[in-house]
Length: 212
Image (tube, rainbow, N blue to C red; front, side, top):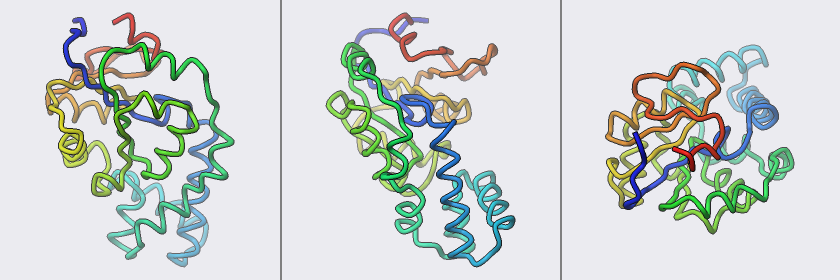
């Protein structure tokens, strides 16, 4: 299978796709979430950790469980648990990423489960804002996280593009499953050898996109 050259629309995930977040950023966000739950739900640290992971597993986002069961205000939670003054110093930048995106043909968006202020701040930090048509964080598509269909349809509607004209690039195979079901072509950024049937291409580096 090859990528054709007419009217490509790229939907890029952010964390662990356009930058490496797992080693430093995610543990800090998890720590902020645990502290937030302790303070605003009124439970001990062990229970807060359990709620954080349980709600993420059950609803796709910790916030969804906190809203449903504890009446937590979304914007307050997202701002308090994603303080950019603490997170941005942990994120490495590359002079190659903006140049690489510029050379990649087609229009490009970021589609992330992170909050909007977090997504926009990291995009600026990476120096890629001029290469993108726009950014979509979770609060811009109704706080319904990937891989739920509503998140994708909201982004497609706002961007004014059709799923069949999109290529989605993700480190999460589960998120790509929904994209494929909607008619997108899918690129999985992973070092795993086997790829699921709904993944069109598996790559180990973003640079591999130019060789597909």
